Image (tube, rainbow, N blue to C red; front, top):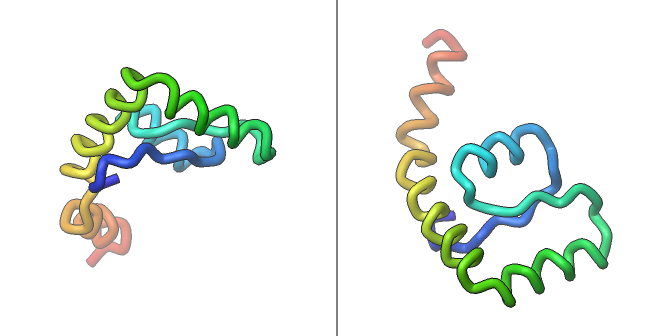
Length: 79
């Protein structure tokens, strides 16, 4: 994400929440060769989409860093 490379993930809840919140990737409903190819071709052929997701990756990486996540993590552990 910090490099601005769009994320392609399965549509699992944790991935979906991050991608929907930040717009930093694409979700796959099925892990099939045809769907992976379709998504990659879409990103390669739609430069505006790719650039938008790329910018969103960089923005998301500013808040999704270990220093911020460590605070949330330790609060959940009640340190």
